[in-house]
Length: 268
Image (cartoon, rainbow, N blue to C red; front, side, top):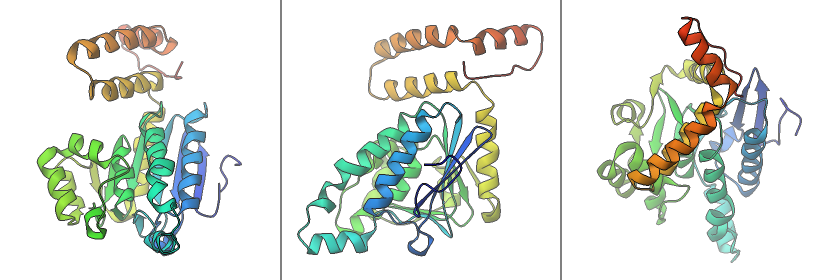
Protein backbone atom coordinates (compact mmCIF):
# COMPACT_ATOMS: atom_id res chain seq x y z
CA UNK A 1 0.00 0.00 0.00
CA UNK A 2 1.11 3.55 -0.67
CA UNK A 3 1.55 5.49 2.61
CA UNK A 4 -1.25 8.01 2.88
CA UNK A 5 -3.40 6.28 0.26
CA UNK A 6 -6.27 3.81 0.47
CA UNK A 7 -5.22 0.26 1.28
CA UNK A 8 -8.40 -0.98 -0.37
CA UNK A 9 -11.95 0.25 -0.87
CA UNK A 10 -12.83 -0.96 2.63
CA UNK A 11 -9.81 0.20 4.66
CA UNK A 12 -8.27 3.65 4.33
CA UNK A 13 -4.83 4.55 5.71
CA UNK A 14 -3.50 8.05 6.14
CA UNK A 15 -0.09 8.69 7.71
CA UNK A 16 1.08 12.18 8.60
CA UNK A 17 3.20 13.73 11.34
CA UNK A 18 3.78 10.39 13.03
CA UNK A 19 0.08 9.46 13.24
CA UNK A 20 -1.45 6.65 11.20
CA UNK A 21 -5.22 6.92 10.82
CA UNK A 22 -6.95 3.67 9.87
CA UNK A 23 -10.56 4.12 8.73
CA UNK A 24 -13.01 1.26 8.27
CA UNK A 25 -14.74 2.26 5.05
CA UNK A 26 -18.02 0.43 4.48
CA UNK A 27 -20.31 3.25 5.68
CA UNK A 28 -23.34 1.89 3.81
CA UNK A 29 -23.09 -1.27 5.98
CA UNK A 30 -22.05 0.46 9.24
CA UNK A 31 -18.51 -0.77 8.56
CA UNK A 32 -19.50 -4.37 9.18
CA UNK A 33 -16.65 -6.82 8.81
CA UNK A 34 -16.44 -8.94 5.67
CA UNK A 35 -13.66 -11.45 5.08
CA UNK A 36 -11.94 -8.97 2.76
CA UNK A 37 -12.15 -6.13 5.29
CA UNK A 38 -10.85 -8.32 8.12
CA UNK A 39 -7.88 -9.53 6.07
CA UNK A 40 -7.07 -6.00 4.89
CA UNK A 41 -7.43 -4.52 8.37
CA UNK A 42 -5.07 -7.12 9.85
CA UNK A 43 -2.47 -6.40 7.15
CA UNK A 44 -2.86 -2.65 7.71
CA UNK A 45 -2.47 -2.91 11.51
CA UNK A 46 0.64 -5.05 11.03
CA UNK A 47 1.99 -2.53 8.50
CA UNK A 48 1.63 0.49 10.79
CA UNK A 49 2.95 -1.49 13.79
CA UNK A 50 6.16 -2.13 11.86
CA UNK A 51 6.46 1.35 10.32
CA UNK A 52 9.14 3.36 12.22
CA UNK A 53 7.56 6.61 10.96
CA UNK A 54 4.34 5.82 12.87
CA UNK A 55 4.39 6.82 16.54
CA UNK A 56 0.65 6.64 17.32
CA UNK A 57 -2.43 5.17 15.63
CA UNK A 58 -6.07 6.27 15.36
CA UNK A 59 -8.71 3.69 14.43
CA UNK A 60 -12.14 4.94 13.36
CA UNK A 61 -15.10 4.29 11.07
CA UNK A 62 -16.45 6.16 8.07
CA UNK A 63 -19.98 7.53 8.15
CA UNK A 64 -22.29 7.26 11.14
CA UNK A 65 -20.98 4.05 12.72
CA UNK A 66 -17.69 2.76 14.11
CA UNK A 67 -18.38 -0.88 13.20
CA UNK A 68 -21.44 -3.10 13.44
CA UNK A 69 -19.16 -6.12 13.82
CA UNK A 70 -19.32 -9.28 11.73
CA UNK A 71 -21.15 -8.82 8.42
CA UNK A 72 -24.10 -11.11 9.12
CA UNK A 73 -25.32 -11.09 5.49
CA UNK A 74 -22.03 -12.58 4.29
CA UNK A 75 -21.96 -14.84 7.37
CA UNK A 76 -25.47 -16.21 6.67
CA UNK A 77 -24.74 -16.82 2.99
CA UNK A 78 -21.59 -18.78 3.85
CA UNK A 79 -23.45 -20.78 6.54
CA UNK A 80 -26.24 -21.63 4.07
CA UNK A 81 -23.66 -22.79 1.53
CA UNK A 82 -22.08 -25.11 4.10
CA UNK A 83 -18.84 -23.14 3.92
CA UNK A 84 -16.62 -23.69 7.01
CA UNK A 85 -15.27 -20.11 6.79
CA UNK A 86 -17.84 -18.44 9.12
CA UNK A 87 -16.93 -20.69 12.05
CA UNK A 88 -13.21 -20.44 11.31
CA UNK A 89 -13.11 -16.62 11.21
CA UNK A 90 -12.27 -16.29 14.91
CA UNK A 91 -9.03 -18.26 14.48
CA UNK A 92 -8.19 -16.91 11.03
CA UNK A 93 -9.09 -13.25 11.39
CA UNK A 94 -10.25 -11.95 14.77
CA UNK A 95 -7.62 -13.57 16.99
CA UNK A 96 -4.59 -12.37 14.98
CA UNK A 97 -6.20 -8.93 14.58
CA UNK A 98 -6.71 -8.44 18.33
CA UNK A 99 -3.19 -9.72 19.07
CA UNK A 100 -1.78 -7.31 16.47
CA UNK A 101 -3.62 -4.39 18.08
CA UNK A 102 -2.78 -5.23 21.68
CA UNK A 103 0.88 -6.06 21.09
CA UNK A 104 1.54 -3.08 18.83
CA UNK A 105 4.56 -1.24 20.32
CA UNK A 106 2.84 2.13 19.95
CA UNK A 107 -0.39 3.54 21.38
CA UNK A 108 -3.72 3.19 19.57
CA UNK A 109 -6.71 5.51 20.05
CA UNK A 110 -10.15 4.29 18.96
CA UNK A 111 -12.28 7.23 17.75
CA UNK A 112 -15.70 5.67 18.31
CA UNK A 113 -17.78 7.88 16.03
CA UNK A 114 -21.01 5.87 16.30
CA UNK A 115 -22.30 2.41 17.19
CA UNK A 116 -19.65 -0.20 18.00
CA UNK A 117 -21.28 -3.62 18.09
CA UNK A 118 -20.08 -7.20 18.38
CA UNK A 119 -16.54 -7.58 17.06
CA UNK A 120 -16.60 -3.83 16.32
CA UNK A 121 -17.03 -3.16 20.04
CA UNK A 122 -14.34 -5.73 20.86
CA UNK A 123 -11.97 -3.98 18.47
CA UNK A 124 -12.48 -0.69 20.34
CA UNK A 125 -11.93 -2.48 23.68
CA UNK A 126 -8.54 -3.72 22.42
CA UNK A 127 -7.25 -0.18 21.77
CA UNK A 128 -5.32 1.70 24.45
CA UNK A 129 -7.73 4.64 24.53
CA UNK A 130 -11.36 5.13 23.50
CA UNK A 131 -12.73 8.57 22.63
CA UNK A 132 -16.49 8.31 22.09
CA UNK A 133 -18.88 10.61 20.30
CA UNK A 134 -21.98 11.68 22.24
CA UNK A 135 -24.11 9.49 20.00
CA UNK A 136 -21.88 6.41 20.19
CA UNK A 137 -23.19 3.18 21.66
CA UNK A 138 -21.47 -0.06 22.60
CA UNK A 139 -23.36 -3.31 22.09
CA UNK A 140 -22.12 -6.83 22.72
CA UNK A 141 -24.62 -8.31 20.29
CA UNK A 142 -23.26 -11.88 20.24
CA UNK A 143 -25.99 -13.44 22.40
CA UNK A 144 -28.68 -11.88 20.20
CA UNK A 145 -27.60 -14.16 17.35
CA UNK A 146 -26.83 -17.17 19.55
CA UNK A 147 -23.08 -16.75 19.64
CA UNK A 148 -20.43 -16.52 22.38
CA UNK A 149 -17.94 -13.67 22.70
CA UNK A 150 -14.97 -13.29 20.39
CA UNK A 151 -12.33 -10.75 19.33
CA UNK A 152 -10.88 -10.66 22.83
CA UNK A 153 -13.97 -9.28 24.59
CA UNK A 154 -13.93 -12.05 27.22
CA UNK A 155 -10.44 -10.83 28.24
CA UNK A 156 -10.50 -7.08 27.61
CA UNK A 157 -13.96 -6.14 28.86
CA UNK A 158 -13.75 -7.53 32.44
CA UNK A 159 -10.38 -5.80 32.79
CA UNK A 160 -11.90 -2.50 31.66
CA UNK A 161 -15.17 -2.50 33.64
CA UNK A 162 -15.09 -5.48 36.01
CA UNK A 163 -16.64 -8.95 35.92
CA UNK A 164 -20.19 -8.04 36.94
CA UNK A 165 -20.64 -5.27 34.39
CA UNK A 166 -19.00 -7.34 31.66
CA UNK A 167 -21.36 -10.23 32.42
CA UNK A 168 -24.39 -7.92 32.19
CA UNK A 169 -23.22 -6.40 28.89
CA UNK A 170 -22.55 -9.83 27.39
CA UNK A 171 -25.61 -11.76 28.59
CA UNK A 172 -28.26 -9.03 28.32
CA UNK A 173 -26.84 -7.64 25.05
CA UNK A 174 -28.28 -4.20 25.69
CA UNK A 175 -26.65 -1.08 24.21
CA UNK A 176 -24.50 1.05 26.51
CA UNK A 177 -24.65 4.78 25.79
CA UNK A 178 -21.52 6.92 25.62
CA UNK A 179 -22.34 8.62 28.93
CA UNK A 180 -22.87 5.26 30.66
CA UNK A 181 -19.64 3.98 29.11
CA UNK A 182 -17.79 6.99 30.55
CA UNK A 183 -19.30 6.43 33.99
CA UNK A 184 -18.16 2.78 34.05
CA UNK A 185 -14.68 3.56 32.76
CA UNK A 186 -15.19 1.92 29.38
CA UNK A 187 -14.17 5.10 27.51
CA UNK A 188 -11.64 7.80 28.34
CA UNK A 189 -13.72 10.74 27.14
CA UNK A 190 -17.01 11.64 25.48
CA UNK A 191 -17.10 14.58 23.09
CA UNK A 192 -19.69 16.12 20.73
CA UNK A 193 -20.24 14.01 17.62
CA UNK A 194 -18.50 16.52 15.37
CA UNK A 195 -15.43 16.64 17.63
CA UNK A 196 -14.61 12.95 17.98
CA UNK A 197 -12.05 12.79 15.17
CA UNK A 198 -10.33 16.00 16.27
CA UNK A 199 -10.24 14.88 19.92
CA UNK A 200 -8.79 11.48 19.00
CA UNK A 201 -6.12 13.11 16.83
CA UNK A 202 -5.23 15.60 19.57
CA UNK A 203 -4.63 12.70 21.95
CA UNK A 204 -2.71 10.77 19.27
CA UNK A 205 -0.54 13.84 18.57
CA UNK A 206 0.26 14.14 22.28
CA UNK A 207 1.22 10.45 22.37
CA UNK A 208 3.24 10.70 19.14
CA UNK A 209 5.31 13.47 20.71
CA UNK A 210 5.93 11.39 23.81
CA UNK A 211 8.45 8.71 24.86
CA UNK A 212 7.22 5.99 22.52
CA UNK A 213 9.89 3.48 23.58
CA UNK A 214 8.67 3.86 27.17
CA UNK A 215 5.04 3.57 26.02
CA UNK A 216 5.84 0.27 24.28
CA UNK A 217 7.48 -1.06 27.44
CA UNK A 218 4.55 0.07 29.63
CA UNK A 219 2.07 -1.68 27.31
CA UNK A 220 4.17 -4.84 27.52
CA UNK A 221 4.32 -4.64 31.33
CA UNK A 222 0.56 -4.17 31.70
CA UNK A 223 -0.22 -7.07 29.37
CA UNK A 224 2.29 -9.30 31.17
CA UNK A 225 1.02 -8.44 34.66
CA UNK A 226 -2.56 -9.36 33.67
CA UNK A 227 -1.60 -13.05 33.54
CA UNK A 228 1.37 -13.34 35.95
CA UNK A 229 1.85 -13.13 39.73
CA UNK A 230 3.54 -10.17 41.43
CA UNK A 231 7.02 -11.73 41.59
CA UNK A 232 7.05 -12.34 37.83
CA UNK A 233 5.66 -8.85 37.15
CA UNK A 234 8.46 -7.35 39.25
CA UNK A 235 11.03 -9.29 37.22
CA UNK A 236 9.44 -8.01 34.00
CA UNK A 237 9.53 -4.45 35.33
CA UNK A 238 13.23 -4.80 36.08
CA UNK A 239 13.97 -6.25 32.64
CA UNK A 240 12.09 -3.54 30.74
CA UNK A 241 13.31 -0.69 32.93
CA UNK A 242 16.86 -1.65 32.01
CA UNK A 243 15.89 -1.65 28.33
CA UNK A 244 14.28 1.79 28.31
CA UNK A 245 16.87 3.13 30.76
CA UNK A 246 19.43 2.74 27.99
CA UNK A 247 17.49 4.91 25.53
CA UNK A 248 18.54 8.37 24.45
CA UNK A 249 15.03 9.53 25.37
CA UNK A 250 15.61 8.62 29.02
CA UNK A 251 19.01 10.28 29.19
CA UNK A 252 17.86 13.48 27.51
CA UNK A 253 14.64 13.65 29.53
CA UNK A 254 16.55 13.21 32.80
CA UNK A 255 18.93 16.02 31.84
CA UNK A 256 16.01 18.23 30.80
CA UNK A 257 14.23 17.53 34.11
CA UNK A 258 17.29 18.57 36.10
CA UNK A 259 17.57 21.74 34.01
CA UNK A 260 13.82 22.37 34.44
CA UNK A 261 13.39 22.18 30.66
CA UNK A 262 10.79 20.39 28.57
CA UNK A 263 12.21 17.16 27.06
CA UNK A 264 11.98 16.26 23.37
CA UNK A 265 11.41 12.57 22.63
CA UNK A 266 12.46 10.66 19.51
CA UNK A 267 11.50 7.11 20.47
CA UNK A 268 15.15 6.01 20.60
